[in-house]
Length: 138
Image 1 (cartoon, rainbow, N blue to C red):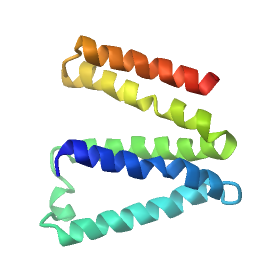
Image 2: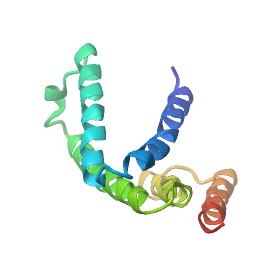
Image 3: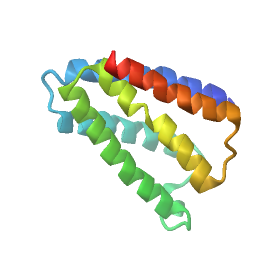
Image 4: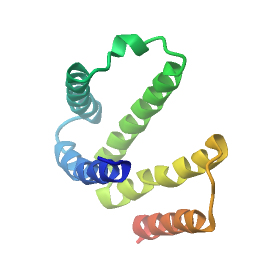
């Protein structure tokens, strides 16, 4: 499966996270929800590694692994903050604001990874900002 299909699968799956979590967060504290939902993530990822030819142990001290650890820390902060925001506010506002990571990640790719910023990609970023503004304020 190519990266576009993986991205579409990820989008389709992640679509249901906010509505399901919002329902749960009416009674489940956000920190408990983070723990329980991410235990499932860890279990599934562990199963995936177990059935693959990859060994996590082989990569614990790889030269690129510090980037994985840093990304994991940012992911933890981001998901904890996202769940907390969902517990306090409406999905229709929290999700578009959270989704601005699309814009900031795109900008980081251009600035930090020397990815090309074409006129079309720039227009897409601007439209994403406008979409979030319209969704979060309307």
